[in-house]
Length: 275
Ligand code: AMP
Image 1 (cartoon, helix red, strand yellow):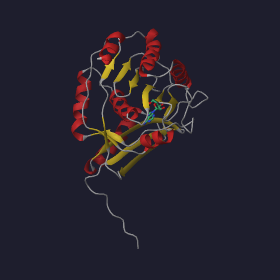
Image 2 (tube, protein in one colour):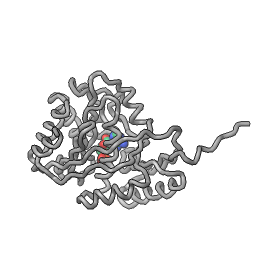
Image 3 (cartoon, rainbow, N blue to C red):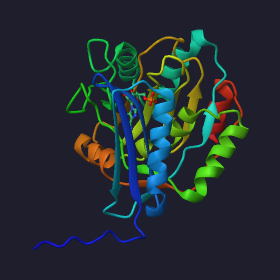
Image 4 (cartoon, helix red, strand yellow):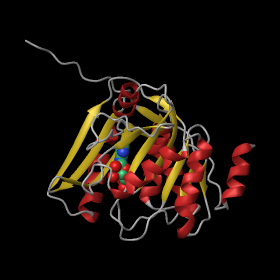
């Protein structure tokens, strides 16, 4: 006879939702919560997908963590004031300042804007890119690496929403992207991250500079553009397998808020980062 031991009650649960339509990912969400909040969180995710997405398959997963989460920090948030026609140039400049070569930055931007899975299709996860050579390092170019098992403490959740709302960034995508970028930037060997959504109506993208800043760029893509994705730039000596394990498996929890700075021109932001 086999016996199963129930998980200790002080461990958190990973709650994940994924909705797809004809095999294409249309909505997803995840968080780490106390056991008694797992069911309500799953219901909240399902309600959101039901209200916003058209899908033929919705999966909810509730899984007790097998290890305590590692604490990671939100990066200070900046928003660069830049007209749409200069957004790509500014993105490339920010990536170069982070230590990404021009060649790697341009390759990643162009690949994401055409659909990084090939044939005009977006990836489900992120590209891993050598920050100097621009070579793609993820094993499966169609799928990419999907970060999972991350979230914020119960105590931070409401404060995070309230702070972003007060700053005028109440969109759920802003919260989710800022939280996810904390795990991405803490990956071993991470230099920077580039992201823009595949939501045709959400045009703000960001460049995260590991250890320094999360810089939002409104109008990084045009309204109606269905392409988007994430590229995580790694130092040339990093181990892509260790990065994949960190992103996919290692639970990460954010406990504290970070600074939310008012929109500013690029020079002001670069000056603030130098200090
Ligand atoms: P979103 O910000 O949800 O619109 O996602 C934009 C793109 O980022 C998606 O097309 C995926 O390529 C990628 N992505 C979304 N969620 C994750 C994740 N958890 N881990 C890695 N990449 C992701």
